[in-house]
Image (cartoon, rainbow, N blue to C red):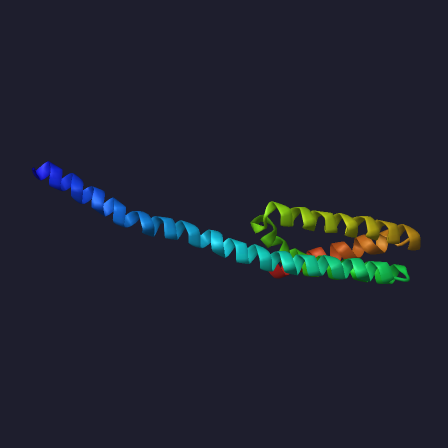
Length: 132
């Protein structure tokens, strides 16, 4: 009789704990959706702004400035990339590819590859120094 009572008590305790465990498991996933949406929106806005800046660039200095601003704004937001859904990551990858192709095209058009590379390196070093 004692064994039956003890097994019943353990089963009851497990039943009471199960909803709490399920609720705890759902909370991070919900937070992850909101975090990924916010990071996705920020990254998408940065990429679209960079694409527009590169499209209207009329000389090498404007191309270098657009790439400098892109790196400076995008690096802090890249931490959210891993939290994005697969669909969001594909959209970001497509926009990043467009930025890369457009920047290479503009750098070749204005013969300013060295200036663009220097601007990207400068922005990267500045961001790394602020992260420490």
